[in-house]
Amino acid sequence: MITILLLWITGIGPPANVRAHDVPSDGGGVVVIEWNLAPDDALLDGYEIHRSENGVDFVKVGFIGRGRRSFQDQTHDGTTYVYKVAAVSDTLRAFSLPSAEVTSHASWINVAKLNIYVAMIIFGGLILYFISCARRGKALFIRKIAGLQAIDDAVGRATEMGKPILYVLGLGYIEDIATIASLNILGEVAKKTAQYNTKLIVPNADPIVYTVAREIVKESYTNVGRPDAYDPESVFFLAREQMAYAAGVDGIMMREKPATNFLVGYFAAESLVLAETGAATGAIQIAGTDALSQLPFFVTACDYTLIGEELYAASAYISKRPLLLGAIKGEDYAKVIIAAALILASIIGLLSRFPILNLFQ
Amino acid sequence: MKKTIPLVLIFVAGLLGIISFVIPHPAYQTYDEWIRNSFLRVLSAFAMVLALGSLLRVHFDKIRRRRKNWQYSWLLLIAFGASSIIGLFGGVAADGILPTAIGSFHFDIQVLYENIVIPLASSMFALLAFFMASAAYRAFRVRSTEATLLLTAAFIVMIGVLPLGHSISKHLPMFVQWILNVPNVAGQRGIVLGIALGVVATSLKIILGIERAWLGGGE
Image 1 (tube, rainbow over the protein chains, first blue to last red):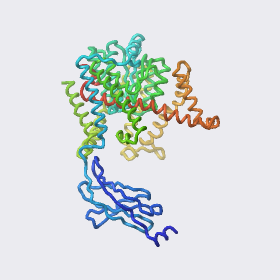
Image 2: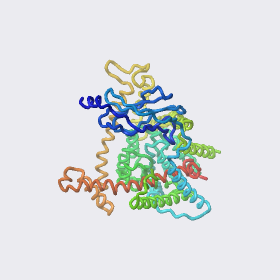
Image 3: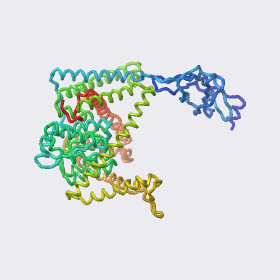
Image 4: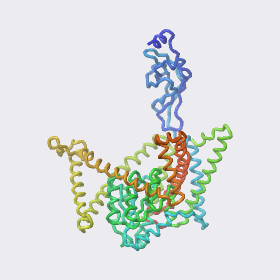
Protein backbone atom coordinates (compact mmCIF):
# COMPACT_ATOMS: atom_id res chain seq x y z
CA MET A 1 0.00 0.00 0.00
CA ILE A 2 2.86 2.33 0.93
CA THR A 3 4.60 1.39 -2.32
CA ILE A 4 1.54 2.25 -4.41
CA LEU A 5 1.15 5.53 -2.53
CA LEU A 6 4.82 6.31 -3.14
CA LEU A 7 4.46 5.55 -6.84
CA TRP A 8 1.34 7.73 -6.98
CA ILE A 9 3.33 10.62 -5.57
CA THR A 10 6.57 10.16 -7.50
CA GLY A 11 5.14 8.50 -10.65
CA ILE A 12 6.70 5.50 -12.41
CA GLY A 13 9.26 5.53 -15.16
CA PRO A 14 8.55 3.71 -18.44
CA PRO A 15 10.75 0.99 -19.94
CA ALA A 16 13.24 2.37 -22.46
CA ASN A 17 14.73 1.39 -25.80
CA VAL A 18 11.83 -0.77 -27.04
CA ARG A 19 12.94 -2.87 -30.02
CA ALA A 20 10.78 -5.15 -32.13
CA HIS A 21 12.13 -7.58 -34.67
CA ASP A 22 11.01 -10.55 -36.72
CA VAL A 23 12.29 -13.96 -35.57
CA PRO A 24 14.84 -15.03 -38.17
CA SER A 25 14.69 -18.46 -39.84
CA ASP A 26 11.24 -19.33 -38.54
CA GLY A 27 7.88 -20.21 -40.05
CA GLY A 28 6.65 -16.61 -39.61
CA GLY A 29 3.84 -15.25 -37.47
CA VAL A 30 6.07 -14.18 -34.56
CA VAL A 31 7.62 -10.85 -33.56
CA VAL A 32 9.93 -10.48 -30.56
CA ILE A 33 9.71 -7.28 -28.52
CA GLU A 34 12.60 -6.40 -26.22
CA TRP A 35 13.11 -3.46 -23.84
CA ASN A 36 15.31 -2.12 -21.05
CA LEU A 37 13.76 -2.53 -17.61
CA ALA A 38 11.92 0.44 -16.11
CA PRO A 39 13.82 2.28 -13.31
CA ASP A 40 11.25 1.10 -10.72
CA ASP A 41 11.14 -2.46 -11.99
CA ALA A 42 11.28 -4.03 -8.51
CA LEU A 43 8.12 -2.12 -7.48
CA LEU A 44 6.08 -2.94 -10.60
CA ASP A 45 3.42 -5.58 -11.22
CA GLY A 46 4.90 -6.15 -14.67
CA TYR A 47 4.76 -4.91 -18.25
CA GLU A 48 1.90 -4.61 -20.72
CA ILE A 49 2.68 -4.94 -24.42
CA HIS A 50 0.56 -2.79 -26.75
CA ARG A 51 0.44 -3.10 -30.51
CA SER A 52 -0.74 -0.83 -33.31
CA GLU A 53 -1.12 -1.32 -37.04
CA ASN A 54 -1.46 2.41 -37.85
CA GLY A 55 0.81 3.90 -35.18
CA VAL A 56 -2.14 5.60 -33.44
CA ASP A 57 -4.58 3.03 -32.04
CA PHE A 58 -2.76 0.69 -29.68
CA VAL A 59 -4.28 -2.57 -28.42
CA LYS A 60 -2.98 -4.59 -25.48
CA VAL A 61 -1.63 -7.94 -26.71
CA GLY A 62 0.08 -9.29 -23.62
CA PHE A 63 1.29 -8.96 -20.07
CA ILE A 64 4.52 -10.23 -18.55
CA GLY A 65 5.86 -10.08 -14.99
CA ARG A 66 8.50 -7.66 -13.68
CA GLY A 67 12.15 -8.39 -14.36
CA ARG A 68 11.35 -9.71 -17.84
CA ARG A 69 12.88 -8.01 -20.86
CA SER A 70 11.20 -9.64 -23.85
CA PHE A 71 7.88 -10.89 -25.20
CA GLN A 72 6.88 -12.95 -28.25
CA ASP A 73 3.79 -11.71 -30.07
CA GLN A 74 1.74 -13.75 -32.54
CA THR A 75 1.33 -11.70 -35.72
CA HIS A 76 0.01 -11.86 -39.27
CA ASP A 77 2.81 -12.10 -41.82
CA GLY A 78 3.08 -9.05 -44.08
CA THR A 79 1.32 -6.66 -41.69
CA THR A 80 3.41 -3.81 -40.27
CA TYR A 81 3.23 -3.24 -36.53
CA VAL A 82 4.49 -0.73 -33.97
CA TYR A 83 4.84 -1.68 -30.28
CA LYS A 84 4.78 0.19 -26.98
CA VAL A 85 5.55 -1.33 -23.62
CA ALA A 86 3.90 0.02 -20.47
CA ALA A 87 5.26 -0.36 -16.95
CA VAL A 88 2.30 -1.35 -14.76
CA SER A 89 1.72 -0.81 -11.07
CA ASP A 90 -1.87 -1.27 -9.95
CA THR A 91 -3.82 1.30 -12.01
CA LEU A 92 -0.72 3.27 -13.05
CA ARG A 93 0.68 2.94 -16.56
CA ALA A 94 3.89 4.46 -17.92
CA PHE A 95 4.19 3.98 -21.68
CA SER A 96 7.47 3.76 -23.53
CA LEU A 97 8.18 5.45 -26.82
CA PRO A 98 6.95 3.37 -29.79
CA SER A 99 9.30 0.90 -31.39
CA ALA A 100 10.38 1.06 -35.01
CA GLU A 101 8.03 -0.60 -37.53
CA VAL A 102 8.29 -4.34 -37.82
CA THR A 103 6.85 -6.94 -40.16
CA SER A 104 7.02 -10.69 -39.62
CA HIS A 105 7.62 -13.05 -42.49
CA ALA A 106 8.25 -16.77 -43.03
CA SER A 107 11.70 -17.91 -44.12
CA TRP A 108 12.37 -20.42 -46.87
CA ILE A 109 15.70 -21.58 -45.45
CA ASN A 110 16.50 -22.06 -41.78
CA VAL A 111 19.98 -20.54 -41.61
CA ALA A 112 20.07 -21.00 -37.82
CA LYS A 113 20.82 -24.67 -38.48
CA LEU A 114 23.85 -23.90 -40.63
CA ASN A 115 26.22 -25.83 -38.35
CA ILE A 116 23.96 -28.89 -38.61
CA TYR A 117 23.94 -28.64 -42.43
CA VAL A 118 27.75 -28.49 -42.43
CA ALA A 119 27.93 -31.54 -40.14
CA MET A 120 25.37 -33.38 -42.31
CA ILE A 121 27.37 -32.64 -45.46
CA ILE A 122 30.66 -33.77 -43.86
CA PHE A 123 29.23 -36.98 -42.41
CA GLY A 124 27.09 -37.72 -45.44
CA GLY A 125 30.13 -37.09 -47.66
CA LEU A 126 32.29 -39.43 -45.57
CA ILE A 127 29.70 -42.20 -45.70
CA LEU A 128 29.23 -41.79 -49.46
CA TYR A 129 33.01 -41.70 -49.98
CA PHE A 130 33.52 -45.02 -48.21
CA ILE A 131 30.55 -46.52 -50.02
CA SER A 132 32.17 -45.54 -53.30
CA CYS A 133 35.48 -47.05 -52.04
CA ALA A 134 33.62 -50.29 -51.36
CA ARG A 135 32.01 -50.11 -54.78
CA ARG A 136 35.48 -49.89 -56.33
CA GLY A 137 36.39 -53.10 -54.53
CA LYS A 138 38.56 -51.73 -51.73
CA ALA A 139 38.71 -54.15 -48.76
CA LEU A 140 37.32 -52.58 -45.58
CA PHE A 141 38.18 -53.81 -42.12
CA ILE A 142 35.29 -53.71 -39.64
CA ARG A 143 35.84 -54.52 -35.98
CA LYS A 144 34.20 -57.64 -34.63
CA ILE A 145 30.82 -57.28 -32.93
CA ALA A 146 30.28 -60.27 -30.63
CA GLY A 147 26.47 -60.03 -30.63
CA LEU A 148 26.30 -60.21 -34.40
CA GLN A 149 28.84 -62.97 -34.71
CA ALA A 150 26.62 -65.00 -32.40
CA ILE A 151 23.65 -64.84 -34.79
CA ASP A 152 24.86 -67.76 -36.91
CA ASP A 153 25.48 -69.85 -33.80
CA ALA A 154 22.11 -68.88 -32.39
CA VAL A 155 20.25 -69.94 -35.53
CA GLY A 156 22.32 -73.13 -35.75
CA ARG A 157 21.56 -73.96 -32.12
CA ALA A 158 17.84 -73.54 -32.68
CA THR A 159 18.02 -75.82 -35.72
CA GLU A 160 19.90 -78.52 -33.83
CA MET A 161 17.49 -78.36 -30.90
CA GLY A 162 14.47 -78.33 -33.20
CA LYS A 163 13.15 -75.27 -31.42
CA PRO A 164 11.92 -71.98 -32.86
CA ILE A 165 13.55 -68.56 -32.93
CA LEU A 166 11.62 -65.68 -31.40
CA TYR A 167 12.16 -62.25 -32.92
CA VAL A 168 10.70 -59.36 -30.91
CA LEU A 169 10.61 -55.98 -32.66
CA GLY A 170 9.66 -54.01 -29.57
CA LEU A 171 7.10 -51.27 -29.16
CA GLY A 172 8.45 -48.86 -31.77
CA TYR A 173 6.48 -47.40 -34.64
CA ILE A 174 7.56 -47.70 -38.24
CA GLU A 175 8.98 -44.16 -38.20
CA ASP A 176 11.38 -45.06 -35.36
CA ILE A 177 14.83 -45.64 -36.75
CA ALA A 178 15.48 -48.41 -34.19
CA THR A 179 12.45 -50.28 -35.57
CA ILE A 180 13.72 -49.82 -39.13
CA ALA A 181 17.16 -51.13 -38.09
CA SER A 182 15.46 -54.06 -36.40
CA LEU A 183 13.44 -54.82 -39.55
CA ASN A 184 16.70 -54.85 -41.52
CA ILE A 185 18.16 -57.41 -39.11
CA LEU A 186 14.92 -59.41 -39.27
CA GLY A 187 15.37 -59.67 -43.05
CA GLU A 188 18.83 -61.21 -42.59
CA VAL A 189 17.74 -63.51 -39.75
CA ALA A 190 14.75 -64.68 -41.80
CA LYS A 191 17.08 -65.65 -44.63
CA LYS A 192 19.06 -67.83 -42.25
CA THR A 193 15.97 -69.45 -40.74
CA ALA A 194 14.73 -70.13 -44.26
CA GLN A 195 18.04 -71.78 -45.21
CA TYR A 196 18.11 -73.92 -42.04
CA ASN A 197 14.36 -74.55 -42.13
CA THR A 198 14.02 -73.25 -38.58
CA LYS A 199 10.70 -71.99 -37.26
CA LEU A 200 10.57 -68.21 -36.84
CA ILE A 201 8.07 -66.43 -34.57
CA VAL A 202 7.61 -62.66 -34.94
CA PRO A 203 4.97 -61.12 -32.64
CA ASN A 204 4.25 -57.44 -33.33
CA ALA A 205 2.97 -54.52 -31.28
CA ASP A 206 2.21 -52.08 -34.08
CA PRO A 207 -0.11 -52.71 -37.05
CA ILE A 208 2.10 -50.98 -39.63
CA VAL A 209 5.26 -52.64 -38.33
CA TYR A 210 3.40 -55.96 -38.51
CA THR A 211 2.52 -55.53 -42.19
CA VAL A 212 6.08 -54.50 -43.06
CA ALA A 213 7.63 -57.34 -41.00
CA ARG A 214 5.36 -59.86 -42.71
CA GLU A 215 6.44 -58.68 -46.17
CA ILE A 216 10.13 -58.68 -45.18
CA VAL A 217 10.02 -62.25 -43.87
CA LYS A 218 8.09 -63.40 -46.92
CA GLU A 219 10.56 -61.72 -49.32
CA SER A 220 13.55 -63.13 -47.41
CA TYR A 221 12.20 -66.66 -47.74
CA THR A 222 11.59 -66.08 -51.44
CA ASN A 223 15.05 -64.57 -52.01
CA VAL A 224 16.85 -67.65 -50.69
CA GLY A 225 14.65 -69.91 -52.79
CA ARG A 226 12.46 -71.22 -49.97
CA PRO A 227 9.04 -69.57 -50.51
CA ASP A 228 7.41 -72.89 -49.61
CA ALA A 229 8.97 -72.77 -46.12
CA TYR A 230 7.35 -69.43 -45.30
CA ASP A 231 4.58 -69.76 -42.73
CA PRO A 232 2.14 -66.81 -42.96
CA GLU A 233 1.21 -67.38 -39.30
CA SER A 234 4.81 -66.90 -38.16
CA VAL A 235 4.49 -63.11 -38.27
CA PHE A 236 1.45 -61.86 -36.40
CA PHE A 237 -0.02 -58.93 -34.52
CA LEU A 238 -0.16 -59.47 -30.77
CA ALA A 239 -1.25 -56.31 -28.90
CA ARG A 240 -0.71 -52.57 -29.00
CA GLU A 241 -0.76 -52.09 -25.22
CA GLN A 242 2.73 -52.20 -23.73
CA MET A 243 2.15 -54.68 -20.92
CA ALA A 244 -0.36 -56.75 -22.88
CA TYR A 245 2.34 -57.17 -25.51
CA ALA A 246 4.90 -58.09 -22.85
CA ALA A 247 2.50 -60.63 -21.33
CA GLY A 248 1.81 -62.13 -24.76
CA VAL A 249 5.50 -62.45 -25.64
CA ASP A 250 6.23 -63.93 -22.21
CA GLY A 251 3.49 -66.49 -22.85
CA ILE A 252 5.10 -67.44 -26.17
CA MET A 253 8.49 -67.79 -24.46
CA MET A 254 7.06 -70.11 -21.81
CA ARG A 255 4.94 -72.22 -24.20
CA GLU A 256 7.22 -72.49 -27.22
CA LYS A 257 10.55 -72.42 -25.31
CA PRO A 258 12.48 -70.83 -28.21
CA ALA A 259 16.16 -71.70 -28.45
CA THR A 260 17.02 -68.10 -29.34
CA ASN A 261 15.33 -64.80 -28.53
CA PHE A 262 16.09 -61.66 -30.48
CA LEU A 263 14.97 -58.54 -28.62
CA VAL A 264 15.83 -55.85 -31.13
CA GLY A 265 14.19 -52.46 -31.57
CA TYR A 266 12.70 -49.85 -29.31
CA PHE A 267 11.85 -51.01 -25.79
CA ALA A 268 10.56 -49.35 -22.65
CA ALA A 269 9.82 -50.73 -19.18
CA GLU A 270 8.86 -54.14 -20.58
CA SER A 271 12.48 -54.82 -21.61
CA LEU A 272 13.40 -56.47 -18.31
CA VAL A 273 10.13 -58.42 -18.16
CA LEU A 274 10.92 -59.92 -21.56
CA ALA A 275 14.65 -60.43 -21.02
CA GLU A 276 14.29 -62.06 -17.60
CA THR A 277 11.54 -64.40 -18.78
CA GLY A 278 13.69 -65.36 -21.76
CA ALA A 279 16.68 -65.98 -19.50
CA ALA A 280 14.52 -68.18 -17.27
CA THR A 281 13.63 -70.39 -20.27
CA GLY A 282 17.34 -70.95 -21.00
CA ALA A 283 17.27 -69.35 -24.44
CA ILE A 284 20.27 -67.61 -25.97
CA GLN A 285 19.31 -63.95 -26.01
CA ILE A 286 20.57 -61.30 -28.40
CA ALA A 287 19.25 -57.84 -27.62
CA GLY A 288 19.72 -54.45 -29.22
CA THR A 289 18.19 -51.08 -28.60
CA ASP A 290 18.94 -47.38 -28.74
CA ALA A 291 16.85 -46.71 -25.62
CA LEU A 292 19.62 -45.76 -23.20
CA SER A 293 17.59 -46.43 -20.07
CA GLN A 294 16.89 -50.03 -21.13
CA LEU A 295 20.44 -50.95 -22.10
CA PRO A 296 21.53 -51.89 -18.54
CA PHE A 297 18.61 -54.35 -18.30
CA PHE A 298 19.56 -56.01 -21.56
CA VAL A 299 23.26 -56.11 -20.68
CA THR A 300 22.33 -57.81 -17.41
CA ALA A 301 19.79 -60.33 -18.65
CA CYS A 302 20.92 -61.14 -22.21
CA ASP A 303 23.89 -63.03 -23.56
CA TYR A 304 24.74 -60.41 -26.18
CA THR A 305 23.66 -56.79 -26.42
CA LEU A 306 23.95 -54.51 -29.43
CA ILE A 307 24.62 -51.11 -27.91
CA GLY A 308 23.49 -48.01 -29.81
CA GLU A 309 25.28 -47.80 -33.15
CA GLU A 310 25.87 -51.59 -33.28
CA LEU A 311 22.15 -51.92 -33.80
CA TYR A 312 22.37 -49.83 -36.97
CA ALA A 313 25.49 -51.61 -38.18
CA ALA A 314 23.98 -55.05 -37.69
CA SER A 315 22.30 -55.49 -41.06
CA ALA A 316 25.51 -54.58 -42.91
CA TYR A 317 27.59 -56.77 -40.65
CA ILE A 318 25.42 -59.82 -41.16
CA SER A 319 24.94 -59.44 -44.89
CA LYS A 320 28.68 -58.60 -45.44
CA ARG A 321 27.67 -56.53 -48.48
CA PRO A 322 30.62 -54.22 -49.25
CA LEU A 323 28.42 -51.19 -49.92
CA LEU A 324 26.82 -51.46 -46.49
CA LEU A 325 30.19 -52.01 -44.81
CA GLY A 326 31.38 -48.80 -46.46
CA ALA A 327 28.72 -46.90 -44.55
CA ILE A 328 29.97 -48.33 -41.24
CA LYS A 329 33.49 -47.26 -42.11
CA GLY A 330 32.19 -43.75 -42.82
CA GLU A 331 30.51 -43.71 -39.40
CA ASP A 332 33.76 -44.68 -37.70
CA TYR A 333 35.65 -41.84 -39.38
CA ALA A 334 32.86 -39.43 -38.47
CA LYS A 335 33.32 -40.47 -34.84
CA VAL A 336 37.04 -39.74 -35.09
CA ILE A 337 36.23 -36.25 -36.39
CA ILE A 338 33.73 -35.66 -33.58
CA ALA A 339 36.20 -36.82 -30.93
CA ALA A 340 38.91 -34.57 -32.41
CA ALA A 341 36.47 -31.62 -32.53
CA LEU A 342 35.50 -32.18 -28.89
CA ILE A 343 39.13 -32.27 -27.74
CA LEU A 344 40.01 -29.19 -29.82
CA ALA A 345 36.94 -27.28 -28.58
CA SER A 346 37.77 -28.19 -24.96
CA ILE A 347 41.33 -26.88 -25.34
CA ILE A 348 40.16 -23.67 -27.05
CA GLY A 349 37.42 -23.20 -24.44
CA LEU A 350 39.88 -23.65 -21.58
CA LEU A 351 42.73 -21.55 -22.95
CA SER A 352 40.94 -18.67 -24.66
CA ARG A 353 37.90 -16.42 -24.45
CA PHE A 354 36.68 -17.46 -27.90
CA PRO A 355 32.96 -18.43 -27.60
CA ILE A 356 33.56 -21.91 -28.99
CA LEU A 357 30.32 -23.35 -27.57
CA ASN A 358 28.28 -21.05 -29.82
CA LEU A 359 29.50 -23.02 -32.83
CA PHE A 360 27.79 -26.14 -31.49
CA GLN A 361 24.46 -24.57 -30.57
CA MET B 1 9.49 -53.16 -60.83
CA LYS B 2 8.56 -54.83 -57.56
CA LYS B 3 11.62 -53.29 -55.94
CA THR B 4 12.03 -50.17 -58.06
CA ILE B 5 8.72 -48.58 -57.02
CA PRO B 6 9.35 -48.95 -53.25
CA LEU B 7 12.90 -47.65 -53.74
CA VAL B 8 11.67 -44.59 -55.64
CA LEU B 9 8.96 -44.01 -53.03
CA ILE B 10 11.43 -44.23 -50.15
CA PHE B 11 13.85 -41.89 -51.95
CA VAL B 12 11.16 -39.27 -52.51
CA ALA B 13 9.74 -39.63 -48.98
CA GLY B 14 13.21 -39.42 -47.43
CA LEU B 15 14.09 -36.38 -49.48
CA LEU B 16 10.85 -34.64 -48.48
CA GLY B 17 11.61 -35.42 -44.84
CA ILE B 18 15.06 -33.82 -45.12
CA ILE B 19 13.60 -30.78 -46.90
CA SER B 20 11.11 -30.24 -44.05
CA PHE B 21 14.09 -29.87 -41.70
CA VAL B 22 15.56 -27.12 -43.89
CA ILE B 23 12.43 -25.19 -44.90
CA PRO B 24 10.41 -23.67 -42.03
CA HIS B 25 7.96 -21.89 -44.38
CA PRO B 26 4.29 -22.75 -43.67
CA ALA B 27 3.71 -23.50 -47.34
CA TYR B 28 5.91 -26.56 -46.94
CA GLN B 29 5.35 -27.31 -43.25
CA THR B 30 1.57 -27.60 -43.76
CA TYR B 31 2.15 -30.26 -46.38
CA ASP B 32 4.70 -32.02 -44.16
CA GLU B 33 2.23 -31.96 -41.27
CA TRP B 34 -0.40 -33.54 -43.53
CA ILE B 35 1.97 -36.35 -44.53
CA ARG B 36 3.08 -37.03 -40.96
CA ASN B 37 -0.32 -36.90 -39.32
CA SER B 38 -3.30 -37.29 -41.63
CA PHE B 39 -1.75 -39.56 -44.23
CA LEU B 40 -0.02 -41.78 -41.68
CA ARG B 41 -3.24 -42.02 -39.65
CA VAL B 42 -5.20 -43.24 -42.66
CA LEU B 43 -2.44 -45.71 -43.44
CA SER B 44 -2.41 -47.04 -39.87
CA ALA B 45 -6.21 -47.47 -39.98
CA PHE B 46 -5.81 -49.84 -42.93
CA ALA B 47 -2.90 -51.59 -41.22
CA MET B 48 -5.01 -51.99 -38.08
CA VAL B 49 -7.61 -53.96 -40.08
CA LEU B 50 -4.87 -56.28 -41.36
CA ALA B 51 -3.37 -56.58 -37.87
CA LEU B 52 -6.68 -57.49 -36.24
CA GLY B 53 -7.30 -59.99 -39.01
CA SER B 54 -3.94 -61.55 -38.18
CA LEU B 55 -4.78 -61.68 -34.48
CA LEU B 56 -8.10 -63.43 -35.11
CA ARG B 57 -6.60 -65.83 -37.66
CA VAL B 58 -3.86 -66.92 -35.23
CA HIS B 59 -6.34 -67.63 -32.45
CA PHE B 60 -8.92 -69.35 -34.65
CA ASP B 61 -6.09 -71.53 -35.94
CA LYS B 62 -4.97 -72.26 -32.39
CA ILE B 63 -8.47 -73.40 -31.44
CA ARG B 64 -8.89 -75.47 -34.61
CA ARG B 65 -5.57 -77.28 -34.13
CA ARG B 66 -6.07 -77.60 -30.35
CA ARG B 67 -2.62 -76.15 -29.70
CA LYS B 68 -1.26 -75.76 -26.18
CA ASN B 69 -3.53 -73.57 -23.99
CA TRP B 70 -6.03 -73.21 -26.85
CA GLN B 71 -8.84 -72.57 -24.36
CA TYR B 72 -7.46 -69.12 -23.63
CA SER B 73 -7.95 -68.19 -27.26
CA TRP B 74 -11.71 -68.38 -26.66
CA LEU B 75 -11.24 -65.85 -23.89
CA LEU B 76 -9.47 -63.51 -26.30
CA LEU B 77 -12.09 -63.93 -29.02
CA ILE B 78 -14.98 -63.32 -26.61
CA ALA B 79 -13.26 -60.26 -25.10
CA PHE B 80 -12.44 -59.01 -28.60
CA GLY B 81 -16.05 -59.40 -29.76
CA ALA B 82 -17.58 -57.87 -26.62
CA SER B 83 -15.25 -54.86 -26.51
CA SER B 84 -15.67 -54.28 -30.25
CA ILE B 85 -19.48 -54.22 -29.97
CA ILE B 86 -19.41 -52.00 -26.89
CA GLY B 87 -16.79 -49.70 -28.41
CA LEU B 88 -18.45 -49.40 -31.82
CA PHE B 89 -22.06 -49.06 -30.70
CA GLY B 90 -21.78 -47.87 -27.10
CA GLY B 91 -19.55 -44.88 -27.83
CA VAL B 92 -16.41 -43.85 -26.01
CA ALA B 93 -18.24 -42.00 -23.23
CA ALA B 94 -21.44 -44.08 -23.20
CA ASP B 95 -22.97 -41.81 -25.87
CA GLY B 96 -23.68 -44.44 -28.52
CA ILE B 97 -26.83 -46.24 -29.63
CA LEU B 98 -26.14 -49.27 -27.42
CA PRO B 99 -27.10 -48.94 -23.75
CA THR B 100 -23.96 -49.44 -21.66
CA ALA B 101 -25.41 -49.36 -18.17
CA ILE B 102 -27.73 -51.54 -16.16
CA GLY B 103 -28.87 -49.46 -13.22
CA SER B 104 -25.73 -48.15 -11.57
CA PHE B 105 -23.58 -50.81 -13.25
CA HIS B 106 -21.71 -49.20 -16.17
CA PHE B 107 -19.80 -51.13 -18.79
CA ASP B 108 -18.93 -48.55 -21.45
CA ILE B 109 -15.52 -48.79 -23.12
CA GLN B 110 -13.94 -46.20 -20.81
CA VAL B 111 -15.08 -48.15 -17.74
CA LEU B 112 -13.78 -51.41 -19.22
CA TYR B 113 -10.45 -49.79 -20.00
CA GLU B 114 -10.04 -48.24 -16.57
CA ASN B 115 -11.18 -51.32 -14.64
CA ILE B 116 -9.71 -54.16 -16.69
CA VAL B 117 -6.86 -53.04 -18.94
CA ILE B 118 -5.19 -50.62 -16.53
CA PRO B 119 -5.19 -52.97 -13.49
CA LEU B 120 -3.89 -55.84 -15.64
CA ALA B 121 -1.12 -53.64 -17.05
CA SER B 122 -0.30 -52.43 -13.55
CA SER B 123 0.00 -56.02 -12.36
CA MET B 124 2.44 -56.80 -15.16
CA PHE B 125 4.34 -53.64 -14.36
CA ALA B 126 4.53 -54.64 -10.70
CA LEU B 127 6.32 -57.84 -11.71
CA LEU B 128 9.27 -55.63 -12.63
CA ALA B 129 10.22 -55.45 -8.96
CA PHE B 130 10.83 -59.20 -8.87
CA PHE B 131 12.55 -59.23 -12.24
CA MET B 132 14.83 -56.42 -11.07
CA ALA B 133 15.81 -58.43 -8.01
CA SER B 134 16.73 -61.48 -10.09
CA ALA B 135 18.52 -59.35 -12.71
CA ALA B 136 20.45 -57.53 -9.98
CA TYR B 137 21.50 -60.86 -8.49
CA ARG B 138 22.79 -61.97 -11.90
CA ALA B 139 24.57 -58.66 -12.57
CA PHE B 140 26.22 -58.37 -9.18
CA ARG B 141 27.74 -61.85 -9.09
CA VAL B 142 31.47 -61.17 -8.92
CA ARG B 143 32.71 -63.22 -11.86
CA SER B 144 34.78 -60.70 -13.84
CA THR B 145 36.53 -57.36 -13.46
CA GLU B 146 33.60 -55.55 -15.12
CA ALA B 147 31.06 -57.21 -12.82
CA THR B 148 33.18 -56.29 -9.78
CA LEU B 149 33.34 -52.67 -10.95
CA LEU B 150 29.57 -52.67 -11.51
CA LEU B 151 28.95 -54.10 -8.06
CA THR B 152 31.29 -51.60 -6.40
CA ALA B 153 29.80 -48.60 -8.23
CA ALA B 154 26.24 -49.75 -7.52
CA PHE B 155 27.02 -50.33 -3.83
CA ILE B 156 28.58 -46.87 -3.45
CA VAL B 157 25.70 -45.15 -5.29
CA MET B 158 23.03 -47.00 -3.29
CA ILE B 159 24.67 -46.17 0.02
CA GLY B 160 25.46 -42.61 -1.05
CA VAL B 161 21.89 -41.63 -1.92
CA LEU B 162 20.63 -42.83 1.48
CA PRO B 163 20.83 -40.75 4.68
CA LEU B 164 23.19 -43.48 5.89
CA GLY B 165 25.72 -42.35 3.26
CA HIS B 166 25.85 -38.86 4.70
CA SER B 167 26.34 -40.19 8.20
CA ILE B 168 29.30 -42.34 7.02
CA SER B 169 30.99 -39.37 5.36
CA LYS B 170 29.72 -35.97 4.29
CA HIS B 171 31.79 -36.37 1.10
CA LEU B 172 30.07 -39.60 0.06
CA PRO B 173 26.89 -38.00 -1.42
CA MET B 174 29.11 -35.60 -3.43
CA PHE B 175 31.19 -38.51 -4.68
CA VAL B 176 27.99 -40.34 -5.72
CA GLN B 177 26.84 -37.24 -7.59
CA TRP B 178 30.22 -37.13 -9.32
CA ILE B 179 29.84 -40.80 -10.40
CA LEU B 180 26.38 -40.03 -11.80
CA ASN B 181 27.34 -36.74 -13.46
CA VAL B 182 30.77 -37.50 -14.87
CA PRO B 183 31.64 -41.13 -15.73
CA ASN B 184 27.98 -42.11 -16.18
CA VAL B 185 27.08 -39.14 -18.39
CA ALA B 186 30.33 -39.45 -20.36
CA GLY B 187 29.51 -43.07 -21.21
CA GLN B 188 25.94 -42.20 -22.12
CA ARG B 189 27.02 -39.34 -24.39
CA GLY B 190 29.42 -41.64 -26.19
CA ILE B 191 26.54 -44.01 -26.89
CA VAL B 192 24.28 -41.13 -27.97
CA LEU B 193 26.92 -39.88 -30.45
CA GLY B 194 27.18 -43.37 -31.93
CA ILE B 195 23.38 -43.61 -32.14
CA ALA B 196 23.12 -40.24 -33.91
CA LEU B 197 25.72 -41.23 -36.48
CA GLY B 198 24.08 -44.63 -36.89
CA VAL B 199 20.75 -42.92 -37.54
CA VAL B 200 22.32 -40.67 -40.21
CA ALA B 201 24.08 -43.61 -41.87
CA THR B 202 21.01 -45.89 -41.78
CA SER B 203 18.76 -43.14 -43.15
CA LEU B 204 21.20 -42.38 -45.97
CA LYS B 205 21.55 -46.08 -46.83
CA ILE B 206 17.79 -46.53 -47.01
CA ILE B 207 17.09 -43.28 -48.90
CA LEU B 208 19.79 -44.06 -51.46
CA GLY B 209 18.58 -47.64 -51.85
CA ILE B 210 21.84 -49.16 -50.59
CA GLU B 211 20.17 -50.85 -47.62
CA ARG B 212 17.53 -53.21 -48.98
CA ALA B 213 17.07 -55.70 -46.18
CA TRP B 214 13.64 -54.14 -45.57
CA LEU B 215 12.75 -55.31 -49.08
CA GLY B 216 13.85 -58.82 -48.22
CA GLY B 217 17.43 -58.12 -49.31
CA GLY B 218 18.98 -58.81 -52.69
CA GLU B 219 20.51 -56.44 -55.22
